[in-house]
Image 1 (tube, rainbow, N blue to C red):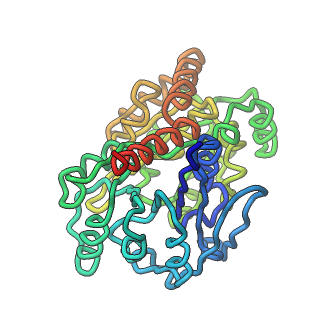
Image 2 (cartoon, one colour):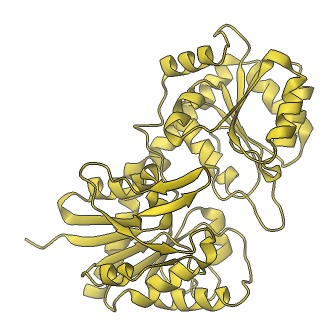
Length: 382
C-alpha cells in the first residue's frame, strides 16, 4: 500500500480557527490518502485585539512566529518556517500572495521536489513597485501551480508573466455548511433580541465593513426610495458607522446597527434577515474579490442582491439578483420586487442553497484542491 501524500497548508489568516475550516476539510476529504497539516502564526494582531492560535481537538497545526505582522505586504515568518518546510512534504499550499515578502520566503525555503502552490485573490491587473515586483517574479518562478479564488482573479492573472505558463485552477473559497445553514429558530430568537416581532415587514440585511467601497450609500438611498415596507439590519463595523447611525436615526424603529459580532455569531444574524444586500462599488484600486457574505447568506437560505462589482455576478449567477453599481433606481426596484413577493424570495433562497451545495460547500472545495494537488504530484511521477 502506498504511503499517504503529505500536505502542508499555511497562511497568516489561519490564526483564526474558522479560517482553518478549509484545512480541516482537506484532512477529512483526504482520508487515508492524504496527511494534512496546517501552519499559522502563534499570535497575530487582530483589528479588535491580539489573536492567539487555539487549535481544535484533533487538528494538526504548527505554530509559527511572525515579524512585522501589522503590514501584511512586508510581514515575514521566523526561522521555524524554514525547518517546517524541510519536513518532507509532497505539496506546500501557500495562502499568501506571491508578491508579498512572506510568499517569497515560502518560495525560497520550500525544497526542490516539493510541489508549491500559491493561492491568490488578486482580481485587478496591477504593476507592483519594487520590491514586490521582484518578489512576485521570484515566487512564481518557483511555483508549480496556483489557485485563483474566482473567475476575475483568473482573468487578471492568467496572462501575467510567471502565471501564464504555470498550471492553475479556479476554486472558490468554501463555506462551512455545518455552521452556515438555515435556522429559523435562531433567526426568530435574534429578531426578538433586536426588539423586532416576526410579524413586521421583511428585514433587509447587510453584513461586512462599513466603508464607502462596500456601497452603503447606495443601499441607504435605495431603501429611502422603496415604496414597500421594510426593516434594515446592518452588521459589521468601520469608519462609516457614524453616517450610518445618522441615517438610521431618521427611520426610528425600522433600523438596527450591530457591531462587534464575532464570526461564530454571524449565522444567527443572517438567519434573522429576509434579504441580504452586497452593493459593493469598484474603485481604481479595488473591486469585490468574492463577497463572502453572499455565499454565507445563500448557505443560510437567505435570498441575495448584489452589485456587478468584481466577482459578485459570478457568485450569484441565477441564484439572486444583480444590479449595476451605484444605480440607485435599479437597487430600489430589486428591493421592492423581493420585499413584495414571498414566493420570489423563497425561490431565490432555494436556488442559493442549491448553488452553495454544488460550488461552495467545503467538501466540494476541498476535493477540488486535492484533485489539483494530486495532478501536480502525478506529473512528476510520470
